[in-house]
Length: 419
Image (cartoon, rainbow, N blue to C red; front, side, top):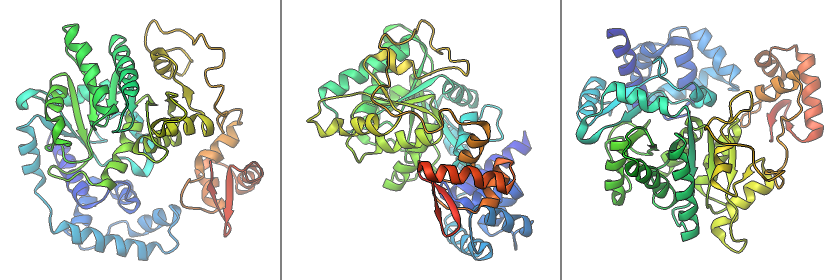
């Protein structure tokens, strides 16, 4: 498919030049498409096509001076384009190790990633198979396996308690056909992957039992101490990364990676975490895009459980008191549980510690305004109304009510969500 190859290679170039979550790049993609966007960000195009539409898109996203923002973006992109690697060569090199690049235009692209909005990845490198045996079909199978999945995340400083609970949850996932997603790190992440694979080997089965989402390039095993684990994952699961091959796993990329774990998964469970940790970053991303989150309670004197307790106290996260509680987070739209054989919790109120969701009980109009209001950059009523499909007066009435409830705040005539 020559056309799809062109799309893939265009998006590979975009991913090299533009950082994840680059709003200006995503708006250009929406306006001009992958091939033209690649020409613009790499400097091959002399100007931005559809400039008026692009400027309007930037203005709608909250840029007060969209022309200035466009100019700054071009300078940023062109500076990075000097280090551009040929996309076709990258594809060939990665295919030799069983890695293939999938894009939003692929039929296998997970619909859940659309929940990230302007933070959706430009594409994903998916690596499968031992000794470079993974095919493009295997890569598509790996993404499909994320449809029924649970993210199990936590601290690198895991206690024996945390490791044991992680093992039990991951083993139960494998027993019920749920793919375990995590970040490949030392501690909770590593145990989650390993336990899913142990159950796989013990049962004599093969399949996508676990997926590791990496912060660095798909060709770099990090941490190095998990080299053997990553090889095992390739034999019974997959590695996924949005980073350009060869890319170093910087702190920024770890934080960006967390949003992918949250978006790919059906729900997120935090086993152990400090109050300030990457695992809580993953949980917060999940809550923002509407994923259910669970937290394992621990020793109240342990800093490694303080993050879990904070989730239970301040969000609608569920108490994970047994492995099946984690699986109960995975529900169909009709409320039935996805894993077979999972019944309701014997606890009458498994979320008793947690607060109700902000959106519980909202009318359709309220929900539309709530979802149309950004969580970071304030925007005016007109934009919120347009995104919500309402009149400005209707949107303003809902926003005023939300302001009294503390759901939003007004900043210089514009509105932003607080919860």
